[in-house]
Length: 346
Length: 172
Image 1 (tube, rainbow over the protein chains, first blue to last red):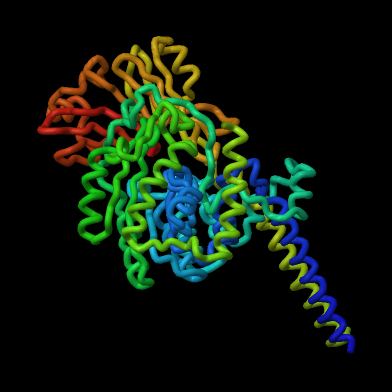
Image 2 (image 1 turned 90 degrees about the vertical axis):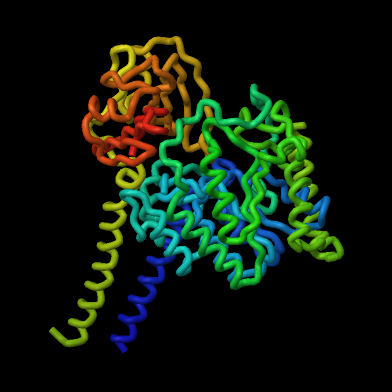
């Protein structure tokens, strides 16, 4: 009898300890979506993605360049933009594995910009891509490929180990947020930017960018592109490679990368669209369609780009879902919130 | 001491060990170690300009003071607000700078932009052979580049048809 009591006491103690650590982790891991919306994107994706027909994968070129709401309004395309800052191809691969585990997208659009990277660049960006993913073999593999010097696998499994010293910067808002329902920062992954900061040149170019000293695309990125292509084939999905219509000194797209990307896409038989070449056809205007001097598109540019790219998605079989009443209702809610946010600044 | 009491003590010891292990892990791991490793010693490689040696990792404020204010500056916020990128353009040279949120702005790369600046007499437009003679045997040499490395930075001379087309010093 005494033995049972000891076992029960130990179990209760361990349970309480686990509960305490879980609560501590929830509190200490940064979780205010208003403080850093980009950091909330992958968590939102994991919570929301289910039956979308189209999934976009990539970095800011993906989550800021194409309005998912416009794709729905104009084409009835049910799409999700699964983007995170500097999302590398091994991150995208893990996201896609998750997408196929929980849904069945028929078109996968992959941002081409990350092909330049062969090595992980920055822990903060790794965290934004990976902390929101549920524990899985895909996540562990992505973590292993992503860690920069000084990072540990254990800290991705137990983020409390990484963030425990935030305790002295916690605010009351950190506590109250735990009790509030999740706050969406994106519109099916699209992160709206409403400001306007014109580009003096009026057109995308990378004048002033660091001269290109390593013209080869990232070897590891190319490996992961091949893996992504294979995963899409295995799941019967059409993969499309996309370069957003932006080019700047800070995020340059060099001619050497373009040539290699075209060759790579041809070798892997992946359709590739460089929207820089369609800049005029899309109708983009850098005096009005960028919020940061030409580095990224604002909502006006993202709507024009979605209007243009929606037709291409239709060619690859993205269906019009506007006859689905439940989806109509869901998108109605998102569209109203979207228009409201847009109007507030307009 | 009874067997049952021994087991109880062992059980509690295991639980305490787990707690101590967790506490040790919490103390041992943290952001101070993970993302921002201490900056190493000053890089050996540097590019001279206006009598000042510029290395990757240098603080930018003193450099700007030494180089003068005849520059133009562009800035770009890094995605997700982890900091800002800047480029300072002088005649013949550009400084690429990153300022982490709340941290010191440092040079990440520096390059010459024309033949108005030189390292040991080597300029853009010069011959690759002359560059090797002046700078020594590179750590890596291909038809398209000469590469010199130290612990923290890499100096690359891009080549086309045996002519230097770019001179760039960057953080590794």
